[in-house]
Amino acid sequence: MKTILCFGDSNTYGVNPRGGRHPFYVRWPGRLQMLLGSQYDVIEEGFCGRTTIWEDPTAPGRCGIQALPGILKNGGLPDLAILALGANDCKRYYQADASAITAGMGRLCRLIRETAAQENQAAPLILLLAPVHILEGIEHSPYKGFDPDAPAKSRALAPLYKQLAQEESCLFFDAAAAAQASPFDKLHMEKEAHLAIAQGLLPIIKQALPPAM
Image (tube, rainbow, N blue to C red; front, side):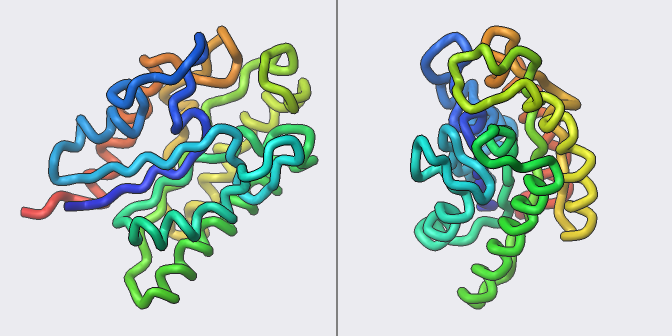
């Protein structure tokens, strides 16, 4: 069985923009599991507010680079690690532009490979998933910390992630090319967007990680 780790934020966790949380079969990791079938094990590791490398001063425990080593060692190295982060890095607390956010993703890539080397195991494939764009008006949403410049930062991430993927020999998928955030809260996705992301990832994963014959 091929294992796929989905390491992300609230859109991986599946926050419903209208309140609560989408069921597993609606969230993009769950959709991906259903599309891929029983020869794949999709592991969902989404956490609300998670960033690449920054610690949220108002809600500790959201720093991705601190959480990832324990997840890798506890669950074992996957065959494929999908890194679906960047939206929360656009908050004003971090004063990070798109280049700095992309550098944070690069550190996560290297951490995965360093962990594999420490464990004397083959390094997993890595897929960088650029987030759906934050919508204009996010500063008026219930989610604190976003300034009016957050949408522009989020729109700048995909080309930089794509370049990073080339430099780090990673796979790449731009979620914003397939889906969008809900106008309802400017940040999270409706069920149709989750399905679109899973469908977009499907051929990439099947080509890079074909099932055992």
